Image (tube, rainbow, N blue to C red; front, side, top):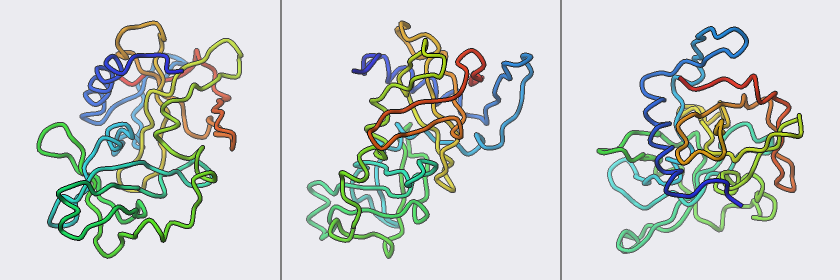
Length: 216
């Protein structure tokens, strides 16, 4: 069950997007020092990518269906996309592409555009990964999950996953400090090496909740 309503989440994502531009700094909770983290300089919201459009070099072709992490859960490996009417009339079809053949760009408004290499695009039949194998690696599913902290007292929804727009590497899992808040305006970030995504879909972290860094 999701811990926040979709409307409130959309408001929070707008706040998060604002916080990510320009390059953010993290508050070091072990002494209130401001520490610059280069890994976040190129971070893009996975939630925004899921709502993004897919373009080839010259034309729009569809929208992002899902993002699939690699087996270790450390980076986005595949982008799955759908080609709706009327784009399908041009002969384009649903498909997927490896993230290293994708350029993540800012659209004309607040949207996100994933520009794919035409030659690297592949049809659904070429995706040998079974859905049952990748269920726990689907970003759309992970954003519906709760993450349990090691202290056994804190559980938070994964509000977003921050991804390096160039490499696809996961640079942080975003949770909200206060799960009862109407707006997700106080995001905290869990370092990716502190997060474990189990094959059954459970997400846990060895991080201490009270020491999580805030996105400033």
